[in-house]
Length: 386
Image (tube, rainbow, N blue to C red; front, side, top):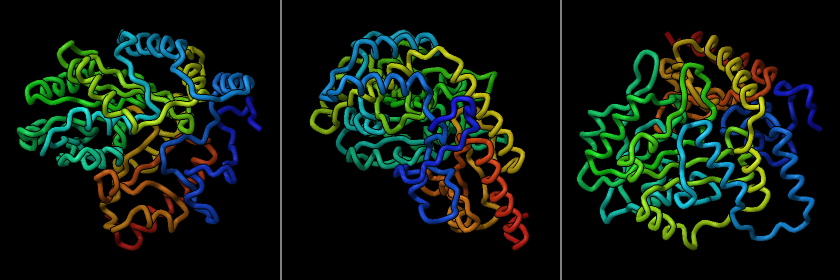
């Protein structure tokens, strides 16, 4: 049972529910901080919306509800200052299908896709699914943050490159790109005749109080005509098991290509997912501000432990942590030996790093940090670190 008084501090036993996050380490003492779902209950107003839909008793094929469309449009304007008409919207069961459909919508024979790395690992599989070549360009790490290297991107971009895949806020580095960075990217795409697919699923999880999310397609009509923007409430409200996402595609021809690519390949969205997402986009309660404040506390504790190994997390609940000084071939496996389940950076295009999901109750976080500290200290004692 959910204890409303406990709030984000409540530890909910997910064992026995076939939760992917916990099933990976079933039968072990390893604490999971890997896959990007939160160990918090979904907010009560979403649970009530799903329960109300279930009471109807029939869960058949369902068209996109008008209240969901309106809630999404109002949310995008209210929170991110972008007004979009209904005809620009294409509803999907998830953001990852949207990435792949975007690639198919603009694919050219012998074409290629430009991807800054490290990045959420399904990005790296998109080119092969669309019979395109993959061009991976490393983000440049400054002292305090990861940035796009436009010189390297320009050198890598070929005449057959058709698409740029963007993660903003960036997974796994936690960047929330600034207006100047996004303007530079928009100019880059226009200069190189690129379409842009922007995964903005973490846009409401901005932790830096001096930062705000900017939809890149809102910058100008020119970049809007070349952009597919992907949104979902799943990460913010911890409802990834109720898949519902939306692509915002202003360009009518590009939208038609996207819809054509979707035909026969992507299934519809269920009524429970529609109900949950409508409630999420309509939310104006204090639940999200309280979540963000709680995540800031967990972020601070993690930063205190790992120090400069981790650049500041401006957005998301994911930290990108540098363990290269330990000279470990398999840092994910090394940490598992200390009872800690993190995502190994290799799958994101960042060998030697790990990704730490800190969206969990404080007591669970503290147990994980104790194990992490033990693993780091052991690595130094064995002469692996400085």
